[in-house]
Length: 265
Image (cartoon, rainbow, N blue to C red; front, side, top):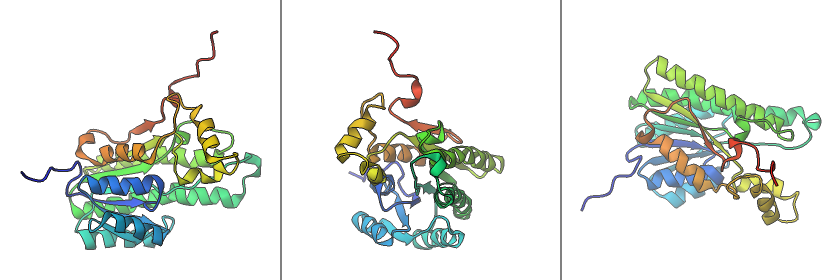
């Protein structure tokens, strides 16, 4: 009996932010479904650990997403090592919470640089790499629920993720206009139970207390797990989503569906 084909069999992906959280699960999920993966992260040791866990189908590359030469190097190493590029997942991100009036320029600029400029560079050089491979492909940008609605205590994060939402649409239309056969979509999760919530957990008596409080804000009554988001990224990376481009894919447990049911006895 022959080997069962995976959903992204034979494809090659770069995943920024691949050393932890959603990025780590995405790397493992894509590899499990037949892709070869570049685990790209500023955390070199973390990227090496994820690549080692995956095996021969993975390559770790150090990537500061804010540095254009490092993006050029990452794409070059990917094609040199695996022979092609089909998928780019722009997963690296950072966020700061607090009173908007006390937001420092350093915090604001850091979010702009990583969350928005980093995604722009990933799209720009991802397109070039996919074009050079002449296979067509898929770019997936991590936005957020905060890329669709505002929040008073994460204004900078919302601003950058909102930028990713419209950047995605513009990149999708660019690729369609020039008939590049490259799709570009964004993913908008609710709270994800990953390392990115660790700084918030410090404000609660325990991490479980934080999870319980956040879960109450989600109609489904729970936080997303990294695997939940990786499954959506897998779909967008695969040919199953061939007619989707410029689309915001919402994975929010119902949060944007409407107001809570507090209007009757």
